[in-house]
Image (tube, rainbow, N blue to C red; front, side):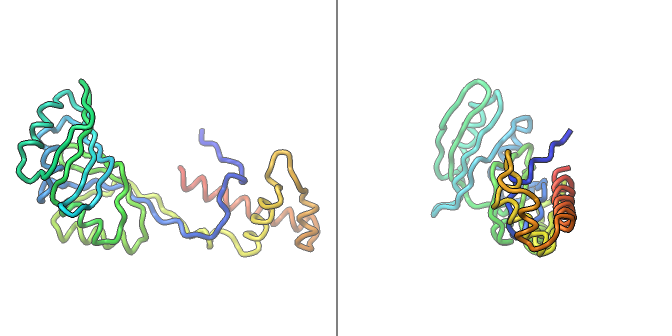
Length: 227
């Protein structure tokens, strides 16, 4: 059963919450050394913990869960396109490696669409699985970049977001903001509904209706977002 947090834990502002898309992108068909390495070890799980552009290419920090750690290390050490390589940690189940490789078309598609890459990103048998949070326009540009680069992709899930400025009326936002600031949702409460009604110069019944309408919209939107 999902629990709805008390309203005092919500951030009360009017910022735009952008849609979040879970994508699977196949990096194997293009020049992507990391995706190629994952296809050589299809049972291994690669987790890209960091990917940073540097002067000589793309600096990656990757955790690989596999019993064949020595073979994975050799795969990277022997690849001519790997410009530097270091094993940060290794045990019987996983290795943590850092290396610099050429910037791939997979990464370029994100950058060209104006999307900041979000880590960690999982990778298995050539397929990246990542969550992307961006505006509808940038998500559209991203899928166009993927198509232009002949990168197969699948949309696994979409969490439809809303513009929080449209969630409540101006009057409802005024109530919620004032109620939070004055401690109406604190335990114990630092002000009463009657005191809030006086602040808004309306009677208690009208204030109660305003309160319930605002809370109903917030709770309904929150549950829809997390369902």
